[in-house]
Length: 252
Length: 240
Image (tube, chains in turn red, yellow):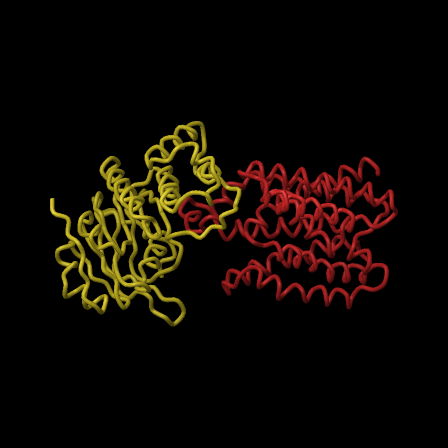
């Protein structure tokens, strides 16, 4: 694995681990998975128009984040319901628009060279997500405990929710290259869910989730290269094994 | 339409509510509710379930829009303690994680220590996940959070709901002490008419969308309570 690829996948995993902590605490675990599917129609459109698939995915994900936020604000439905209903359909639409190898790569991630625009996008986006979570962690906590209390101390709850969803969407876009549409949601959710089980405070949870996400990404990437198999399934399998071990450990 | 509470300048009146109406779609929750709160007063808000007590508080903090007049005195800072919050018990969030959102600047640690001492919490308790705190301890944590903003007014939405008897007494003591020490104005939603009779300077009784406002002896009458609750209501009167 090249240094660039290592750096890029590590920063992607860092962002995924951090943003995932609040997704898990906000009970958005399934939502994360469904949201990642929405990238697929974007990739399909981009391929049809002969532009970089990443741009299509990012545009579609950001739009999806905005749509979820607007529906939640207006309908007061549970976030999981909205994302589940609206965006599982995206997978269906996306599969109709993408075909063959492109579809397989979009779904499960692919190997191949990392281009310079991808590196620049990846590092900048991961930095933005990381800074957002660390900087806003206390505001996110108060909003989680009580949006009304958050309002009384001057937190713009609506705006914070929108920025969070867009950061989540961008994190999904970060991982599409390595894990694909189907599995990126898992890298966001599983390390954070593991960290939630074993942590006793917020700092521990953020550190463990980020560390675990980076670890499973590097080990998974190396294992995939060794066995000459796709990266995404390896990363998520290792993450899931760690989660189950921690779950069993916690019960004893 | 009052999106955000405006301000009034009349001295000593810190909250002026006049013909406040709140509706959710076609449903009118509160209609033409009027009352005034002066500095240092203790106003109890009572009424049957569903009479709009929490909705009124949410309008007072600017969380929901309302019609009519809702004016806070200029520069008033309020601390809000919401109704019992159902948090997942396994969140790895400690009391300190929560309180630090309110603590900023150089004196953050001092303010934090001061606030938890004021509500009788220990540092050890604040290092535990909030899900492991008892109902009473969690309510005291919420009050500590409100105190960190150095409020002039405390709005407490049924702080003793779901708390055991000794915990309730402790919360009532803390609220009374804070009010005396800090010259706080308190707005308190309560179902405990004995406590209301003992502590409140004024009572706002909501029922069927409308309101009765006055001193406890004029509001907590058998006839009015019977009319509001639809059944005879008795409560224990503490003699001093």
